[in-house]
Image (cartoon, rainbow, N blue to C red; front, side, top):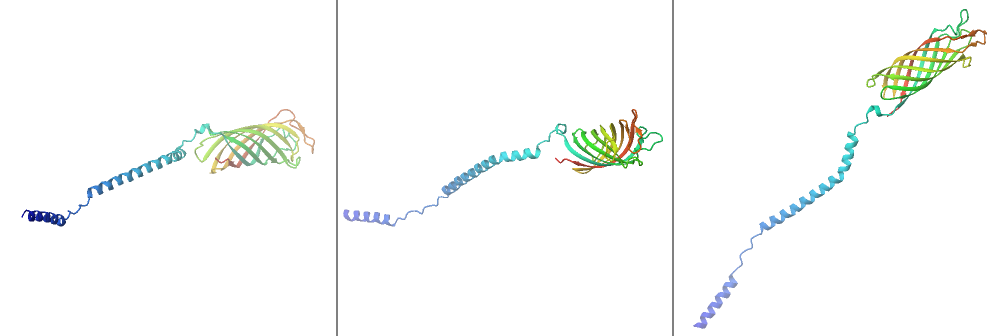
Length: 253
């Protein structure tokens, strides 16, 4: 009996072990979510580090660009002068001419026209210095075929209202001159001139000018060849008005 009991117990135990099925494994959702979270955190961290590195590399360029855009210009008074070339035509009207035209003699200083060229250096304050050459071709009344007056001068001008398109100006010049028949030198002399006018900006590098000038000059004594008349015998001052029009070419920035 004892033998049968032991045999049944062993058989039951084997049967239970064989029949017993393990419980199904529950999916580890917690572990999976945790792993995804870790991976996401690492990915975000990597992206942030890459973004910071990119911004750090671009920062000097951005700073330089900002400096180029927002850099303040130097004060105008510290800027160097810029050059300007002026070309003029003039109508000449004699006013005082007794020294060149003795009483009772033909006058060699009649009305006429002229051309001029000036190279000028202009400062931001409105002051300009220049050198120039004038040629007047005048009526010689038969004594001269054409009277020529050549004037080599230095000039100073002041331009106002520099921020507007129209700049009124005043100026003066002083220089040496040659007086004679058609570019011939009959007499040396000297002169001074004052002028007032306006300059109108057409473009950034082109302007139009109009001015009224008065010139005073004197020459040494000489004889006109065709009639042998003694002129400018003794000190005397001649004068003329000139209505001047011109174009100015300005040096670009």
